[in-house]
Amino acid sequence: MASMMQPQIILLKEGTDTSQGKAQLLSNINACTAVGDVVRTTLGPRGMDKLIHDDKGSVTISNDGATIMKLLDIVHPAAKILVDIAKSQDSEVGDGTTTVVLLAAEFLKEAKPFIEDGVHAQNLIRSYRTACTLAIEKVKALAVSIEGKSVEEKKGLLAKCAATTLSSKLIGGEKEFFATMVVDAVMAIGNDDRLNLIGIKKVPGGNMRDSFLVDGVAFKKTFSYAGFEQQPKKFLSPKILLLNIELELKSEKENAEIRLSDPSQYQSIVDAEWNIIYDKLDKCVESGAKVVLSRLAIGDLATQYFADRDIFCAGRVAEEDLNRVAAAAGGTVQTSVNNIIDEVLGTCEIFEEKQVGGERFNIFSGCPSGRTATIVLRGGADQFIEEAERSLHDAIMIVRRAVKNSTVVPGGGAIDMEISKYLRQHSRTIAGKSQLFINSYAKALEVIPRQLCDNAGFDATDVLNKLRQKHAMQSGEGASYGVDINTGGIADSFANFVWEPAVVKINAINAATEAACLILSVDETVKNPKSESAQGDAAGAMGRGRGGGRGRGMRRR
Image (tube, rainbow, N blue to C red; front, side):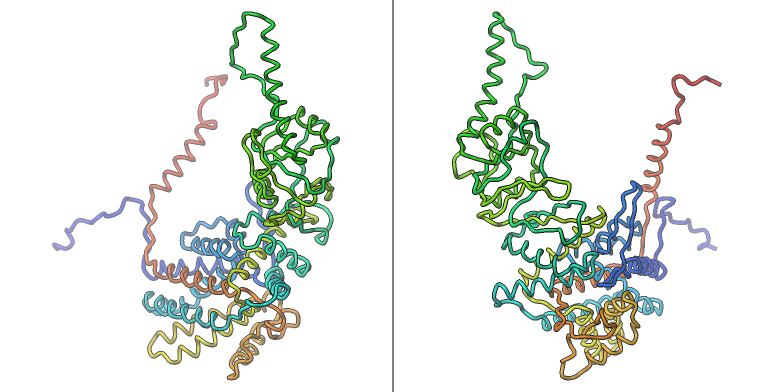
């Protein structure tokens, strides 16, 4: 009776939603598996694309895992972790975003039956972490270095890595063409880490093969005034002056007040304004520069003044383009025209303005520093060019990684099968439940070759059996065998030049395991009602503000 009289303890605010225990964990696993199923079909050279259109009506067609995850607008708190690992993979190595989401979802899927059977999540987490360490050690052991080769050989090897990345993209049909272009662009910027030194400019029209690489800087012709057409459009070895000032006739401020005792003094004030601008222009001409670029406007007076003196000028140049010209031509952006010395002027072998499709481009090529490159992309639809840009971004990141960490592993699911075989063998040496968990981790790794087969329309079971047999050979000669997308059988990925940098695999396995362990370690979700009601109140207030009140001219009833 006494126990019935005990008051109920209210710990959390009324309306707080809490879910805990096994059901909560399984719900999180199901949510992550659902996210994995969304991007599953985009994996590999035969992967399908997703068309996503948002509430603003903009349409994106992509098969880049990170782009799709960003645009999906996932609200489930546990599934958001998968979005984060896709973003981190994209920013860290550039490729393997679909792989990392797929692996994390598969690890959780394999853990689900154990959780249902009452296994404690911490046991699974411990085994998964052990398996992850073993897998990464194995990747490092299997990786082949491309260091110590001649420049030409290295370029060829890097182009193979870029082609592997591009084969799963929309522009996969022209992967050799673009792979060479990407390698040349990355080689042009040398050891500089700044990705913005490689510019990608998009010009609708033409076909993909009309795309070209500028060994220097190219940007779209900026807004120009009368007099522009009289300026020369081509120079050989010109000096380039970069400015961050306006070259316009500035009138006095609107609220300025000038008191004059003599009307003739007014003319001297007007003359002073003109003298200021002419003084600036004279100093630009005296510097010996033949090309003047400014981030701010260059007005009609200045344009005509430069045209009369055979100087090319462009105002309102984007800051990013101006900085790239500075890096390539060896100049420095000036905030004043006083004391312009030769050291702050840049130069290049050829400057010209060229027609590309329906646009005119200013092109600086043969730059002395050479630490920049520009890819001009052509193509039919805007969506297509956007996707081509995303694809090239992935390829550029991969080549940069391969230059820095010069080890590669076989692609096409070969490395996944080899790690899977190694973990299965290792698990047999362990006594206890951990054997089962590491075995399930090994099975999850097979999702990559299986999905490659499914997406290409092959019999996944048949291909995987062949791969298992090949990888089980004692001699180790089958270690680099993966799925052959063209024939539906298996092939030596190394011999077929299907390579990817080892860092991509290491990062993917690491991030996917971390995400899976993080989700498995959550046993309770608490939803605060306050945040929801705050959103509701805000929406209600907006509704009232829009038309809830009575209008001024509305008749009273």
